[in-house]
Image (cartoon, rainbow, N blue to C red):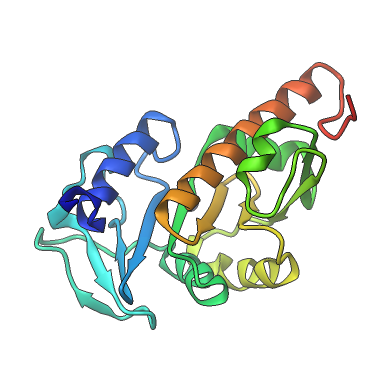
Length: 209
Ligand code: ZN
């Protein structure tokens, strides 16, 4: 299962996320933790073209253990935000998406995104079809690293949520491993798309059918 190593997984997942519109324009990213080492995609690069030689290795304090073999790469500004989920929730992986669906969710909703009665809700940890999903929304800042404190507060205040939306910016989603983080990001993106269509057609996304 050599291709399951984070150094192979991160480039493969970034290509998928690029095609989904989650990490175009060099934005977005992913970090995976295995055996106490955090593997992270670099900053400001074409996310669909990164290779195993471009990945950073960090410890849980955020110190770089191993810089990429490719010279000149920088650690991403979202590094402290990834670490919020690793430290506060013991996450095994964190995905940052600039999906337009996530953006529209932050435009339609003020401080909390809500949706209920959708089959895909069952893909989120601890939620069933009849439950109302609640994802906190925090204000964006001029620099990504300045989001760290407000994101940390939102994580503590919303123990049921494995995600934080950022106004007109995107979303951070995590899980116990990369599979759960990916599943939850996909399910949330679907729910954001559903909510957008419901609102566009004049209905509430928490309508009971
Ligand atoms: Zn971002």
